Length: 103
Image (cartoon, rainbow, N blue to C red; front, side):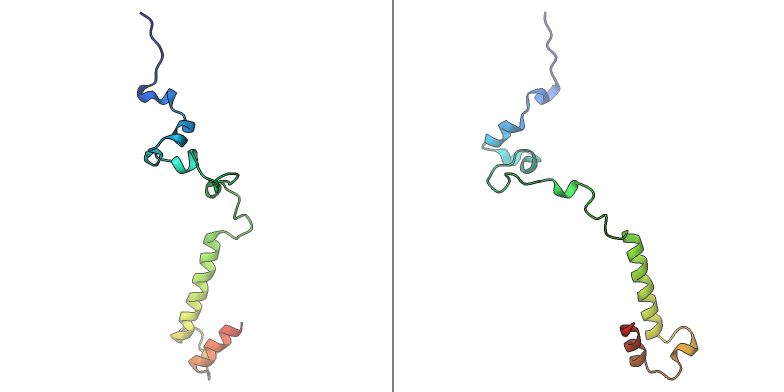
């Protein structure tokens, strides 16, 4: 008796090229990336979002968030008149807000 090596479920016989022409291709998970059909997909990088290196010029997100939080704390301190008394002496809230906007 001869045994042939088979993989359970027929994984060894599966081909994405066959999915392209299958009438039920929408039922296959990943069909839009692995078996693209149509003119708009030709020559396009369909997995552009999964590749790294697109944001190397941007500062790290945690540094940006820390800067925004610092600015918000300063704005809240100004709005609530909390902080150094010398900073707020003789100025109204509108003057302080306008001063910070011009910085």
